[in-house]
Amino acid sequence: MDPGIKILSSAQNKQCDALTTAEEGMSNHDLMDRATARIFQYLQHQLSGNIPVTFICGPGNNGADGLCLALMSATKGYSVETKICLLGKPPSAELDFRMKLYASQRQLNLQVIQHVDELTLQENSVIIDALFGTGLSTPLQHQWASLIHSINNQNRHIISIDMPSGLTDESNEVNSPCISSKKVIAIQTAKPSLLYAENQVDFDIVDCGIHTDHLVSNRFFLDPKNPMVATQMQELLPQRPRHSHKGTYGHTLLIGGNYGMHGAIAMAAKSCYEAGSGLTTVLTTELSIPYFSGIPEIMLYAQELNAEAVLRLPMAKFQSLAIGPGLGVTAETVDWLKTVLTNHKSPMILDADALNILAQNKDLMKLIPAGSLLTPHPGEFDRLFGATSNGQDKENIALKTSTELGLFILAKNTYSFLSCPDGKVFYNGTGSSGLARGGSGDKLTGMIAGLYAQNQRMRDAALAGMYYSGIGKPII
Image (cartoon, rainbow, N blue to C red):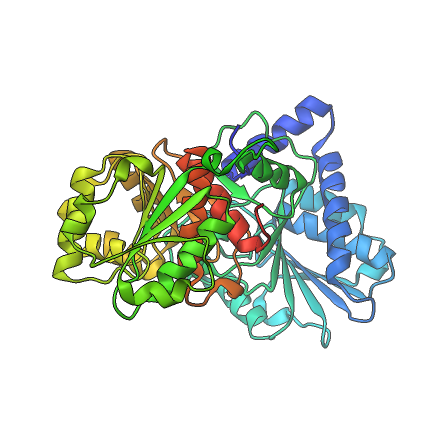
């Protein structure tokens, strides 16, 4: 079973709604009542009882969701105003039903907006954005774009329901008008655009009881707040029976730490050891030796990083190989990496300067053994595969390379993703700004190498590595 919550398109989410009502014998109204009740449970933790709340609802079912939430908020004693923004469009059947049902609820302070200039907001209110959910395929224009800009210019705390209004589900459009949400409450599943770096979205998923089991997806989100995902990720870690020894957990070789960059390989080695590699050896230069004084558990081959050094290595004794932290990009290291790729045919982990060498020598890509892992940060990704302006294109390029060359690619970012040779992609939810500092990538490489030494499954090692590096808790 693949770990994570399915990432579904708008069309797939609509299928899930229909499947849920059919299987449970309920109406669409009943499903909306249940979903919005669960969203409201989450929303209450985001609101203060002393701050007024403005619900801005659109003409579709997302607007109907917002209207339901407005009534729940008013019933709980919040100071509420509700703006139904139609701008000349007729309301959906669900919104029309809710407007008629709640017409007598004066505490909603309901106003129908037909023109942008009619929108006024109570002072200092939190805005709940329920203009549009999923389903947009093109950027908003004309009055709707003006409405988005008007709301953003209020400089308010904004919480969006399901999607920041104006953001298309999955598009290569960049800088299209979109609500600047502080938080997004995603209904049941992650949507592709929520995960793309250019959109800079912070979201949480609320389980609304919508059935997704029968829908097939090749994309998954590792949500650390979901207990099922936490259990799945724990199951990916290598088993460590009590009656075992260091030989049980593999032997890792890490290579790097050239002149001026010795700390990188030392951090990778320490992380590898802490991830549980039974034995950890480093091939590095003699000048790196002082950096290992605090980690005596690490064994060293201290010599020049050249092709001759590779040929002298007893490669058969290592179950895991990671190359790149602090390696440097020189004529010698280029020849050195080519020698490794030519003579070593087992899967390996390539990071940092190993990736920079590949970017400058694209012909070496075809020499990488199938099943290997590349771990580029955004700059390294662009150098390897070409710059992209949006997350959809970046994911497509990674998947194309993974499937054609049989490689795993871990593209690092806030929502890092792993693309796999079988066409599946896994986005990680544990990333944070705490990882945005030198050395985080070196530690991740070491952790994955240590995990791979123990289980010999590159996908599981990469998934567990990126997930637990974000959490920052010890693996063993």
